[in-house]
Length: 204
Image (spheres, rainbow, N blue to C red):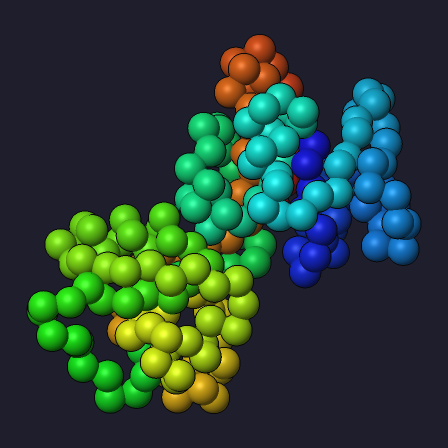
């Protein structure tokens, strides 16, 4: 099972404990990236990965299943089965712009700064809006403030960071939370066992 390192790790450990995974198996004090534990009398291995890498490991069969944010999954367009929404890490992906913003002239593309160019492009394409994507990794809020972009597409929880930087939400792209993903071949071969394991996890 591929498990994302970072802010969700502690919540995820508590959630997986309800499915029979020993909490110590995902201890933050342990620096090893490959952990082993016994779940329902059977050995289970956990790989602690960067969130962006989880879909790759699962899709290519290096891991049978994993947990990843829906944002990562939609951006990567990985071919995986999604049997369960954990409800952890709830937030929204939005389009945000400077307060009082007005759309640019129709004779040029809308400049969009984001870490999620595929998701953003699909969102604007559905509305018939031509865009120029500007890929940025972090501190996306600064892009429209210095003229790098017209708007941004990013994740927000409370919206406080946007407000502090003079930005407002102008559209919602999608809701995001952590979901369980399963390799398609593995799901076909071991569906009953996987669904039994999923059934023990808290509902979203």
